[in-house]
Image (tube, rainbow, N blue to C red; front, top):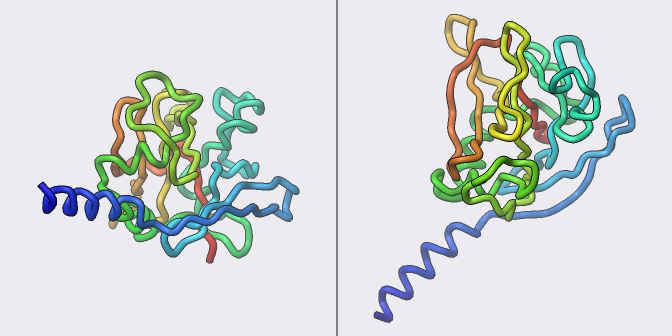
Length: 194
């Protein structure tokens, strides 16, 4: 029994071994202030970027949604959207983030507890990453799945240049997932400090 408890404690401690510091950053381009969080070795925006660029949108073209969920960017716009000293999260940085814990539960640790549709499985936001279900914009201009999905661009595209990697969290899953999508989709952006 004692051996079992020691093993269990070792497993549990590995899931909370990430470094976490809280901060803020004010974007000099528009004066917006973002929460930031250091997870592992990287400083992340703890909010979705809300800097207006060409090929970026507020969900349903309602700026009130942008103030809550940030903007949705095409892949090309996402590449240039972060302020100086910050960059679009790289695939390797997303992998580093997801390696802080078991990929089957880290999504819940990244998700905010509010704004998500039920059941919002595993959500406790213990990382202070504050992932909100911002939905996304399809290439034909439809806004879908607000409340159900948080989809983020990574900086990595495929060899043919038509698609790029996205990272996503779902209301009915506690994991973190990856997939390829057309670059014309509108997804959220998380900036990482250079």
